[in-house]
Image 1 (cartoon, rainbow, N blue to C red):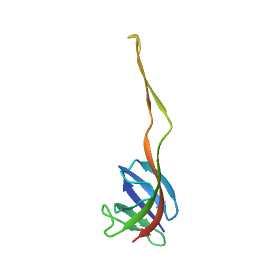
Image 2: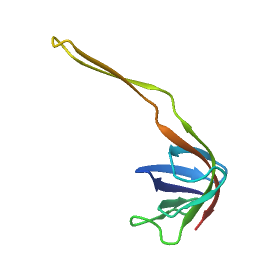
Image 3: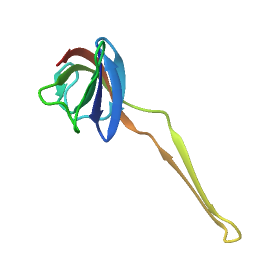
Image 4: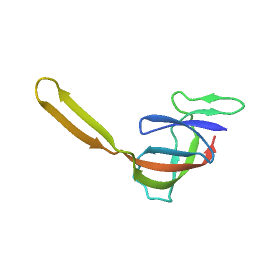
Length: 102
């Protein structure tokens, strides 16, 4: 059985035991969290929400918080001697899915 959940403005396809990386959540490492915004449940028969499935929950355990790879942002206006370089590292939370409750 798998589920499609929505969190942080993005959708993820998850199964029990999967490890996913999402935008940073304000929770402690090792704590359990639940996602109630389940868009779809799949398996033998698919079940779709309008927009979410009532009563369906996905539970997960937080493994770690971290920062992603550095992305270089370079801006330039030609013939104006304007150049600007910036770096960005996105914060993330790594989760492992512990259960899907339909």
